[in-house]
Length: 399
Image 1 (cartoon, rainbow, N blue to C red):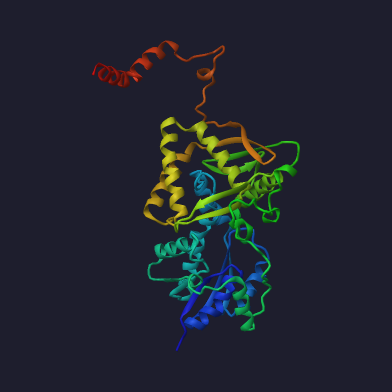
Image 2: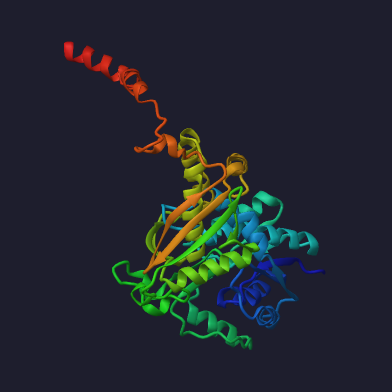
């Protein structure tokens, strides 16, 4: 009898490597490993071969770096997406794309099952399960890592017992998830929110105390809300984000240490390196402030917040998320211009901004020569503006 096939969202790490023999033994599936490259992945061919060593009938690498940035990360950038005001959602943004690729592969292979290595405590299990169900409700999603209850040492022993020799050890104390939009570091000493992150937890950012003593300025250019150039040099999405990561990391910018409210109801200490994404969000917001009307700016804040929550909660493919993204895309028609960013000792801020669609009028804003603001209108405006509260005050004071 022909065996059922299962597509495994494969990372090349310990959990997903152990899932290959585990699902073969428990369910009798033929496993197809699929590794989606969303950036910062090294030795892709070695990782692909690792899936075959673990027992998969096929192991593939799907290149999706640019798609990840243009269709997911930059869509979130338009919404200035920072979960709880701090986290640029790098992991949350990659999961819907990975889910989409898994569904496409399942259709190609005639597979009825998709599996992932997400744990029961994390947010990613929700994002993967829900995204896949949104894209194809007929596919069954499996998360064996939620049920097997094995520790890292036990998983290594499990593979060794089956004669599967992989270059994985028990030494690494951290759980790492990274892509072009950022890097997350968990576990080990980081589980104590009182303990400062050890120096070896960081890979792309220097300690701010060791950053250069001289500040550095760069100019980031946007077209319709999308970053397109640095210092006047046009760049593709991948090159641009990688360059900002290097610049920010050199100056110790982009470290985020927070206690985060996970979707599953627990608080988690999270440490991130997000130099490129965080700098772009800062710059993008500055440009919006320059070109938006007051009403649009205030209303979009609520839309941004809601979309950020939906992304974090695994609802990228929900009807509401589609509608909110449509509104946000429409709002970006005039978010074109330049922002000058200044880096110094762990900090990054906007030192200047300009746009052909700027609503800043020097003649209206100035207190000096050339002032065209109608001062005589101010008194009447204030009288009418405060009229409702004045009537209220008179009425209640009389009582």
